[in-house]
Image (tube, rainbow, N blue to C red; front, side):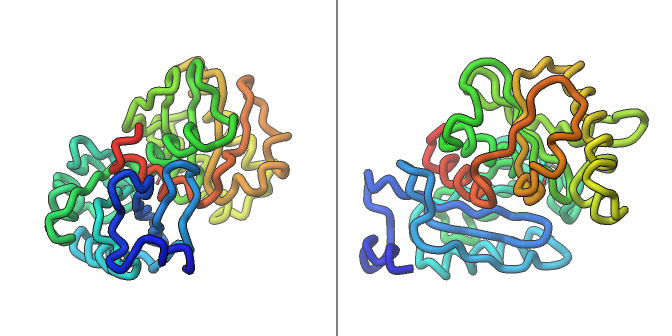
Length: 264
Ligand code: BGC
């Protein structure tokens, strides 16, 4: 954490410091870090706390506050959630506590964090923003890029000519009578003990449906399973190229920090 000391005693971001703070709320872990927005790199280590169960607004907010406190961060904060977030209000909760639905998460987190500025956005949208900005060329700036995060569910970010179209929720499209994320998320593969080849067949079907609906130019795939992309990308049978995301488990945090910095 030695880098953090450059921020001064209160570790508040000075105007123009180029630093931001992001927290990524996931199904198993809540993770936060200070982000250098010029490079998309963390400043020091990230801090992770197990996602409290049940993942209610109260318990998640307490965890978010603990992470902010851990860094002594006094500036504004960006937070991701795994659901539809419109104007700070959560509109769906497939893999988190249903108590989130209708919650003004932006106001709620801000209240818990002493009234500071807070941005809240969908986790896959945050990953898409970060990948597009810092992904080193994996995401193209022209045409339609669909970034998918394959984990407990399937998250999606739709980026057209470099502009994010938020809350696309492609993981909830029905493919052959089954919700896409119940057919082909990384969790489904693990739970059913499928080989990568077998799972790639399921994912191909989902990607083919996305191709029919949106005619994308490129799929960028993130989430833990993208680290083993060489084991399953060769088995895909859909038409549009699929590349692994460049940013690994940092994308959600970086995108959250970008969102509160207005950097999108
Ligand atoms: C949620 C999305 C989220 C994705 C990945 C889905 O179940 O509906 O909002 O982006 O999981 O966490």
